[in-house]
Image (cartoon, rainbow, N blue to C red; front, side, top):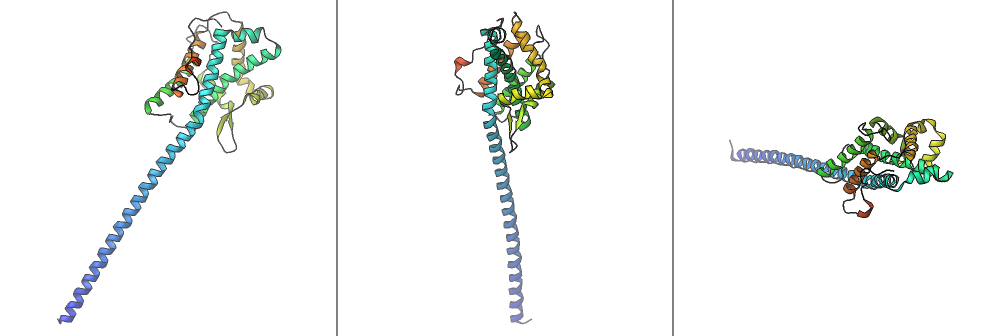
Length: 256
């Protein structure tokens, strides 16, 4: 074999080896790039989900907090300040209508926001896992107080299925699909014009009338108010929305 042919063969082999090596390195680099991009996409997706969840809870946290505060405040006024006796029994026609309907609305509003939380997130992203468990536990305790047959009377006993149903009928869906709660004006209009809507609230409305005439302590309402305060303390631990003096718990045994 001539020297020229040998050199040519060696050159060809080197060129082929270089081409194969370059192809392998290029394939490896391409694979690494694909894997890197996949990891970047995964991290971005995780971050977006976390941001979306946090944005959702930032939007929902305040309405839940306000609905819990408004309901516990009304219960406090009923039990400790004789709200229903003053306005539903001895008030003017306008005051009687307001005392009954607004009290009914505050119960329904709270149940609506609990149902919205249930519909909007699979688990609560309200802070660390311990806080999540505590908030879910508060929701569960409040539901149990309303559902329980262990109190002396059945006033404000609402079965869990009915709690969810009342929450469902109170949900208002915006054009962009975001869930919210009916306002008080719309609530009153529905009560007057939609029999099926009013029917879900009829039993609770009767309980408000019966409570106004009762002259006994109301342990269910006291327990409910205590648990609502616990929920408020979890959602607003630094008392940014509501100062501590708005968080007084009722004394057991008070008569409304």
